[in-house]
Image 1 (cartoon, rainbow, N blue to C red):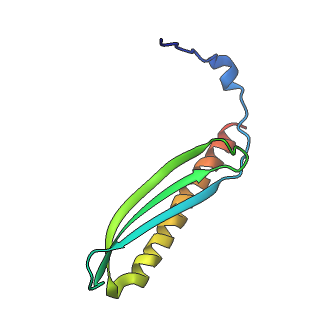
Image 2 (cartoon, rainbow, N blue to C red):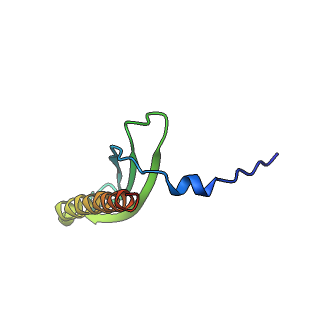
Length: 103
């Protein structure tokens, strides 16, 4: 059974966007590719959630995979921290724009 719900566009136009608290979660999984530990493979996933909605409002933001050599571990870590900051900044700007457009 399929039910289509048509939104009342007139009432949505007057809806005010309310600010909410948002948390960023960064999940990093790493694995040595061999017993020599010369390189590691990693996967990173960024998600956001809101503590105001404990049952939901969780959404995927981005992910990446990579290989990091033993000589570049600090550089790889710095890159992931910078990417996490960029993801949070992008979301902050998006939410700011939504709040400003609803005024």
